[in-house]
Length: 375
Image (cartoon, rainbow, N blue to C red; front, side):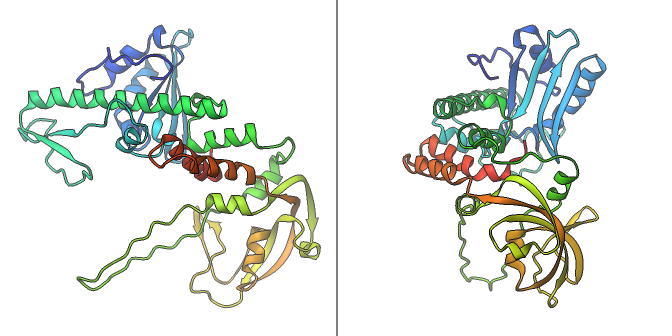
């Protein structure tokens, strides 16, 4: 829980979340934010039944969700006495708790998870441990396991609390931004950029049919997967590739200023403007790896042949060698490098700290996350 000194007065061994909510849903914790690490992909399944029960009991449950990610769950009563928000700290700090506790040098370390392997008829018996990709401790005695699993969970809570408080203080001291207002790394990165770097009236506001038109030109990055099948005994080399988001944001111009519409061939204006247009496309030949993407029947595909799509000008000029285009209409803008100061400042700040320092990690995730902004 954020905002107060950590207290683990509420620690229970239970197969439901009922004791947790009985403890939290009081006036004492009004306005608190409760964090669970990896809530969206794991812990949320243990709360569904209790959240449904709370809804039937008259509590208002407001879920903020994006695709398959639960961003936050706000629980209130209609009298205004109860108000807590449950968030996923992994969406804010995308790393394992073990790595985070090491990175932020917490007093409480991530422990080794005890796994019960005693009586196979017990509901806590773990028959298969092959899914674990971390060190675990096998416990045969049920009472011993119950004691150790509570200690393990309490240590997790303390460790996560220390990480979040340290993270909150470092971000606020450097940028005067409160992490409580931003549930994901991209939203926090954008808050820093918008507050300290984005000049007024730089990015035009869009809505209605213009916003929909522009949105259709973005389909996500094109990726390929290669599965090597080397002969037995032959060495395979693995390479760590750094994220290209910061360098691309640093070096390239982006659309700014007033939105103006056009019809016909916008390329007569040269490369002086950034534009997004509706185009008829045809591949010059069947491509082994076509790379222009469209949304088709709820899927993203890269076709051969001919079709109509929305495309942005950098993508258009890059594809002229493989595709023929007939430009129909669209919108054009001025161009400017708006992320240069943000990326340069964070890169230089990161370089001033060793990799073991939490500020090095914070700068890294802020630089990599601004381009991924969702909230």
